[in-house]
Length: 100
Image 1 (cartoon, helix red, strand yellow):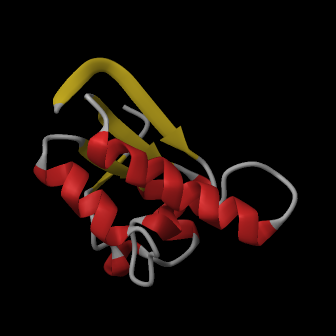
Image 2 (cartoon, helix red, strand yellow):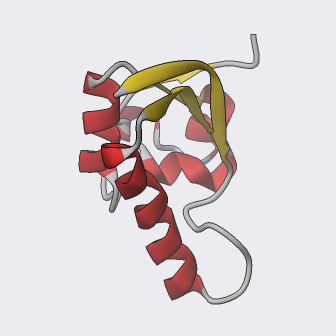
């Protein structure tokens, strides 16, 4: 498995797509599961807005994100978003980052 330095993924919600929440949550899990067997993985995944709930306590995909991080993918959660949702002290995967 190789890190693709040109592959950046931005996650802005805990669910992928709009519509049925349960389906969106399943799709989110599936996206991260696919990376486990993919030949190329993103160099960085940035979590914004409510997407930061995937990198904090209670995340349904924390194990998958930790595995990606161990393989070299940088996991970054928006500092402003972590503070807005009062989740800074609950970050369990990756690091906080700002717009710079």
